[in-house]
Length: 186
Image (cartoon, rainbow, N blue to C red; front, top):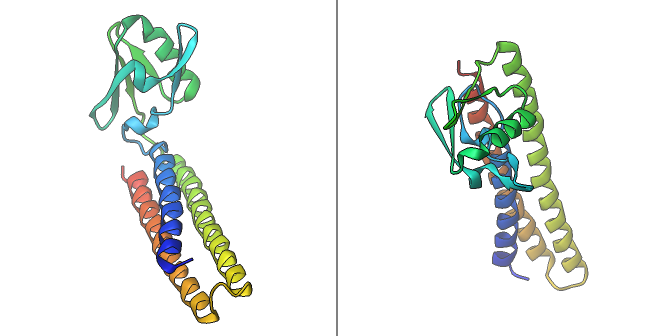
């Protein structure tokens, strides 16, 4: 067990956690159109379930509109139904060739609710990062106890793990702050 391996392993785990946090945040409505709002929609089409992105091209022509252009026009009703089922606040309109979704303006009250939800997500990602830190610290303490590493090495490893954890918690805070500003922007 060496310091580089430990640091790389914990960075990898924490990077994955931050990446999934960003994905989760992309699905939160901000009052602006974003393909992230509908990325995870699955459409039942010809008896099988497929991700929307495999059935259509998705674009954002302006800050209030999401356009969906299916490869097969016969899939329009199924896509429209899947969008309504996924989020009842999204109101798709079908013109026979494409589907457009106008993103409604968020009220101030709704923005505050979303911020609360965002803060809960932020706390959960920080908790996940701290859990990784605890797991790695326990591994290091076990190695020290079994005399695989010295006490000095154990302290040094734990200090390095704390530095890595602090940097990822700071990154999560910055991502959250940016998303909060995006939500509060009218």
